[in-house]
Amino acid sequence: MALKDDILIAVLDNAVKYDGKASSGAVIGKLLGTHPEFRQHTANLMEEINRIVNEVNKYSLAEQKSRLLELAPEKLEKKEKKERQLPELPNAVMGKVVLRLAPYPSGPLHIGNAKPYILNDAYAKKYKGKLLLVIDDTIGTEEKAIAPEAYDLIPAGLKWLEVDFDDKIIYKSDRLPIYYEHALKLIEQGNAYVCFCSQEKLRYNRAHSIACACREKSSANHLKEWNKMLEGEYKSGDATLRLKTDLEHPNPAFRDRVLFRISEREHPKVGLKYKVWPMLEFSWAIDDYLLGTTHVIRGKELMMESEMELFIWNLFGWKPPVLIHTGLLNIEGVKISKSKSQQEIKSGMFTGWDDPRTWSLQSLRRRGILPKAIRDFCLSFGLNQNEITVPLDNLYSENRKLLEKKADRHFFISNPVEVTIEGATGREIKIKLHPDYPERGFRTFKTGNKFYISRSDVDEFHDGDMIRLMDCLNFIVDGAKLNYHSDEYAHYKAHGKRIIHWLPQEETLAKVELLMPDGSLQIGLAESEIKKLKPDAIIQFERIGFARLDHFEKDKAIFWFAHK
Image (cartoon, helix red, strand yellow):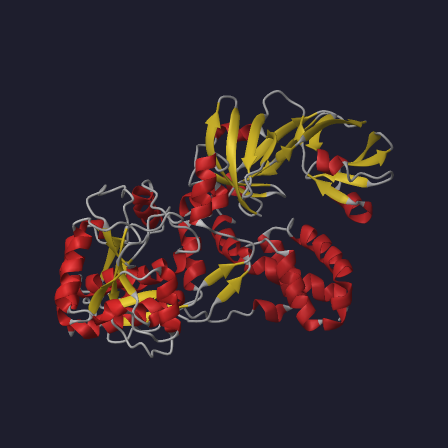
């Protein structure tokens, strides 16, 4: 079979799989697997794939299936699809499972947080259990400060993501007396001590398995010093409460870890009421027991914290919950930092936490990414401990499958240029709102010989090129002139170079600003039908991609771009 046939079959197969829209990237990956000899000629191969993808994506889904059936009927054989099932949780009892979410409120949740949160929610639903939302608002650090607005943004993001947590939200900052009570018990047991060593001394002692002089003092002395810490006699950095562990532990970081430290910074919820704050693993060791958590599903990067919790539970004689760790999910091309985003928002570089560059759930919602797409994307990786790096288009592919059928099509011309096509006459053009669903209706354009097209398209014109205005007419480039040639698509198919989208020159066109994921704006014109849309509508701009109408601002429509 010729290579061109292989490409066409691969493109048709990909288009049918994704509701009528093939992706060049997905096709080339598959073809290079079957034709490794073409790895040295990927540029030429990609050019041919792009050409065929552009052609195939103009067919209706029914036409694509018909063509695929003709060329490779085996591709359309119906295969039984097994629904993805989450593995069973160890020791899980229906109706008795209690899971918890533990967000630190340095900002809203983002796409990188989504996987463990959705897994917890899926398991709570699977076992008809309870999912607790515990805001982990211990004091944090100067570099990773609490963002007060996150107290509202986190629950809002989870609700949008269809995560069903318990109505009563728990805040760590309300539970400081409980943590103090259990710290006191550890000191009385002789398992914790107040330490005045510097960070440098602490690191040196850990590395060399040396017990500091503070460790050897009596419990009575440590109780006295602990009370001084609570009463505010010591300042930040003067003293810490440390846990006695094995100084010969193979991991130096585990040796006599800090349980509490002093911070004199004001807390956004409780002010200056407390100055002694617990570390993450201590507060969770106490709360997981007291809140009745049966299973903890958390990222693999917290395995040290899990080991510490097990150690503390053993000291108190408590039965531990089941601990399950999942690998980090990395998305190619997506760099996320709440601390950096917080700085960019304060500086005015970002417009807010819903700026598309934060990758927050709020920003994804405004772009038109659907919660089901994020859930399907995250659940597709299941419960596995491997660190995974996936292309961003995997997320977009899930969203594309949901939007392809529901999103109507419209024209948008970025950076428009007015052109005249000599010899073109007035006509009425009717184009389907959706290529596969004519029952949805049509957009009607009345044209003359003046049109708007994108500056980027004009820059690609060459003398002698036959160009087609999509679903309208063909013209020939003749120097600075554009001459009408014909209406029929068959003429273009035989001799044409490119198909471009367009708008008729008329006063009723809509002014549009399209906010891109990198924060840049595309400014242009769209067909007048845009003015009839309601905010939150998600449409597909022909040959550009999906976008959500955010709002109307005076005489223009503001859209947020989702993806191609």
